[in-house]
Length: 525
Ligand code: TNX
Image (tube, rainbow, N blue to C red; front, side, top):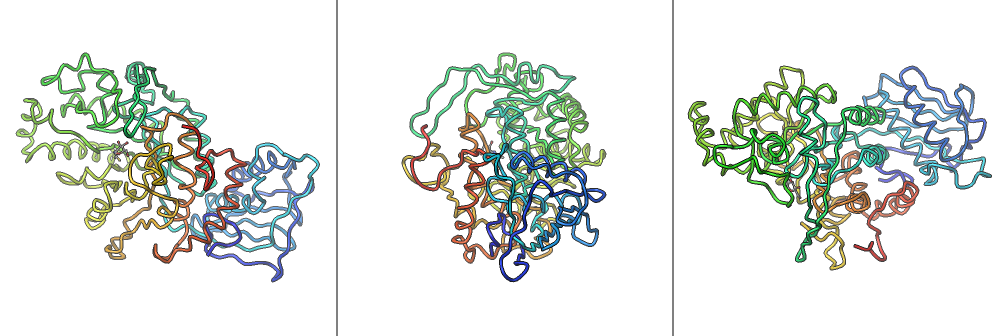
């Protein structure tokens, strides 16, 4: 299915004319943006000029590049036509044109991904004379980045957005809070970041030899940083979906504001930001005070993130403190709930209504199904496919991200020299054969699968290089699954994907991605 070496594989592609030809790009090549494509033109000019040193001046002439929105095409669809006269990149919207521009960059060769020309004497580049017609399979092609366990400085996030765009991924699920850290400035609650974004020591290590690093770790994004990240993403047609995890995974918030915890059963005043991995038993108290506090957090969040979806977590909330807490038990009786699961669903349901009233939609991890799913909620199905199947059957939207298939913190190989040997073994081929839509869904139910996302949890990734290593090359296979209409898993042509990967590794090299090498020594750990 793969045409040329384009990744993700486009739906259709053919040579123009029948014999392979090449179209030259040089000092004279101009770039013209029809209305609505100006920002794409700016992006393309910046990217190509940086790599080639050619100006790609604004202008409309034969032999130039023309970007255009064609309202007759589907929203994210695009068509690239490179014939004897011009290069035309059409899309159903600016997003479609942008994905077409990404494909065009691939056709220019791996050096088009560099940020400065490596051969200033080279004044001519060639692209193959082809027609490519393409459109995505899913509208939610996501990557979840956990910046709570290990903080990724803003720089690294912007770089990840570029890498996502190069692979036609369009949703960054931004896991901003957890037991181990709170990463977004909230003006009305300054201690969330003053206290909640730092931990005194951090456990790093895995497998049989855990190692305590007695060093502090932390960091956070200011609101202006977030505005910049969101704008940078928007220019790349990526939506940033923020996640504030409640009512579990909240120890960092409780460390900052102890009254958020179950003060009737534990002494929350001495709690620190959690410095181990695993799940903290210290969860939010199901009180009106907590609800008001998080409404305040979400109010500021909605100003920062225009995304229609807002993620409220809901995963792995240990209920022991609620079982022991007279306050929580009184709440259960007062609301006529069956048990603690009912309390969690009441909690999530509150924010479902609160967000809906503000024109947004709630999305949560599949535990939000327990005790009853809130009306408008969408589900991130992580504990396998089951939660997603149940939600789709009940008419709810679903993002498929089952941990056994697309958790990129899990090891990539069974070998003893794998530097991060945790979790299930998920090879590049396993990810390539991941199917987001389970066969047991009817076509109508399958229509509720908005798409899929790969999740990068960072307990064992203390820096950029490690995040790159775990994410790549598997994210490339994932991107093809999310974008291209591949056949059933057993029929997928992994050999053809590997053939195209040979070129793609050179693109990743040019981008400076520290991927797991397909052969040879693994990085020092
Ligand atoms: C489960 S997935 C979690 C995360 C961990 C991850 C490690 C999910 C909603 N919860 O908190 O980081 O496993 O693989």
